[in-house]
Image (tube, rainbow, N blue to C red; front, side, top):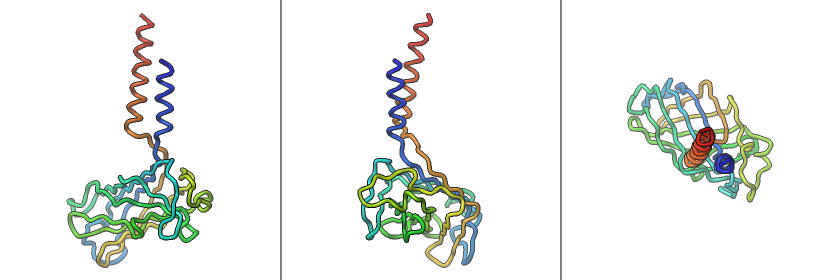
Length: 201
């Protein structure tokens, strides 16, 4: 039964995705706040498998992220724009222009169409890392390629003339287990507990 627990624990490590998490508050820098996002909080989450391999996109080294990126908005003055919205599939460029990493969608800035006011575009910039700068086509993506930081230069803008700047951004990069893996670990622990209870009787 200890083998079951060890197997579940191994699965937890083997099936963990890399999670890039950006939390930021928006402040209207210029234009009209048609989206109602001045002062709103945004949480962008993007995942990629640590077994993913870099290729070439737009003539640069890049890796395609998992197709489940989301942005969660809270505190919008237009309540209809609060909620969690799917982002288009993103690609991560670990050394875009040599000084930082960046996320793009089919070579363009990622965007999401909100229920009220139109489209919000994202310029998601990641701080450059030593390992990220040395990555090339054929290399396997790794956690150290993403630069956790509190000062990456994020810019958000709508399709009109509004520009929102970041306030107190927090970027974290971590390994997060898949839901199925958590179930496997829980089942292994429960089985181990039942055997221990049976032996104590």
